[in-house]
Length: 175
Image 1 (spheres, rainbow, N blue to C red):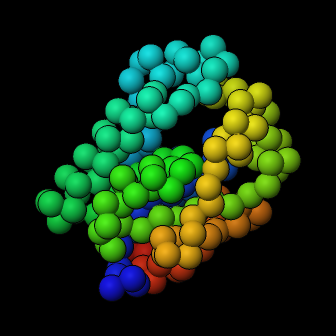
Image 2: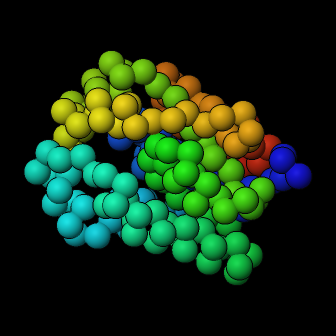
Image 3: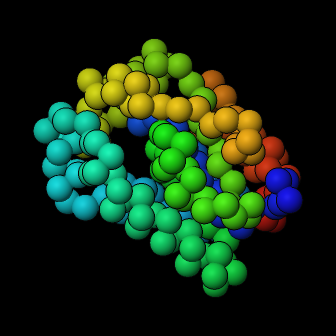
C-alpha cells in the first residue's frame, strides 16, 4: 500500500526551504489542520538556535517525539493534518511516519544558494542563516523506499503547494 492516500502530510526540508509557508498553503488547499514543527520545540532548543548553535540528536529527540505524538493523534482520531518538520535524517522520518503508509513525506528540494538567499530576506526567525550549512551536512534526502514526494522549490509557494496536492493524488477543497 505504498501509494495510499495520505491522512497526514509531513512537509520536510532544511531551514529556509519554505516548510511553514508551503505547509500552511497545503493545509488551506485541503481544508486540513496545520501544525508548525517550530511550535513543538522546547524553549531550550529555541534558545540554543537563537544563540547560533545547531541542535544535535539529543536536542531533537523530545521535539520529534512531540511531532510524532501529534501525527499519531491524527491517525487515531481519523482527522487529516499537515505538519512541517525539517526531518533531516532517515531515522527522524522513520519516527514520524512509524511505518504508516497514510503518513506521506513531501520533501522541499532546493539548493543552498537559493535557500540562503530566501533566509536573508525573512526577518524575525530564530534560525540564523549561518547555521544552514549544518542543516545540509545533516540532510539525508529521502530514499526511494520512503515513498517521499520530491518537490522543487523554484516556483512560488502557491505553485509548490499545488505540486504537493497534485503529486499526492489529493483534491483541493472547493473555495
